[in-house]
Length: 251
Image 1 (tube, rainbow, N blue to C red):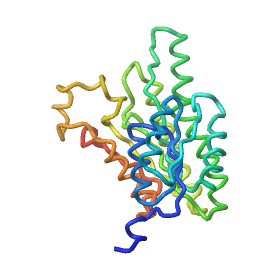
Image 2 (cartoon, rainbow, N blue to C red):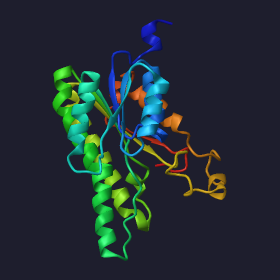
Image 3 (cartoon, rainbow, N blue to C red):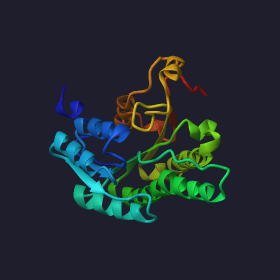
Image 4 (tube, helix red, strand yellow):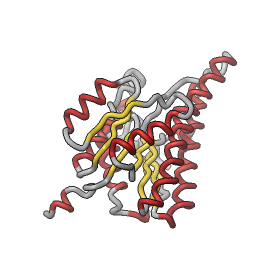
């Protein structure tokens, strides 16, 4: 096997948001293994990001940004670009499952505000930065991690989360349709339950026993899909939404 075949992402410069743990860390490991240089975005988990960068060694760099703060995505893009010498691959993975309870008007409003900022607006701002830069680089790839909630909606306490993820799904489709001519490829991945801190405490053994595969999706399954998509090995999948739920949710 040639070096190029073994490292299909050699020379690529990837920004992974929420990269210090869970799905994001698995994605950073997968693209780095395949030859990419990676910016590992973090906010509160500085130790996790720095430990991961140390584990990966060369071509891995932690980058700080609080994406809950409006406008912070623009600074993150600039910092990642300076660190990597430009970014040609964006993986919007950062997000949070934040309640928006009906009973209290203030909590409802705050839940919507935070969900939209973290799960949609910050990702959209990064997509905007990518769309301004990628045509000058000859193209690039965007993967937006949404959720099965983008299709089916979420529960009564998390209506805002489902709506934000649905917006991210629509954004991905629009990017693929509007910027393919400029060499920009865009994909959405919609996981169900994934074995991360987000799922801990939310799904018990009884619920797991009802899943078709009798297990929660490992983060590595999501990561391998991302690595494949951004490699360009199936360019005509651009615009697609790929469900990864272990058949727990099938549409």
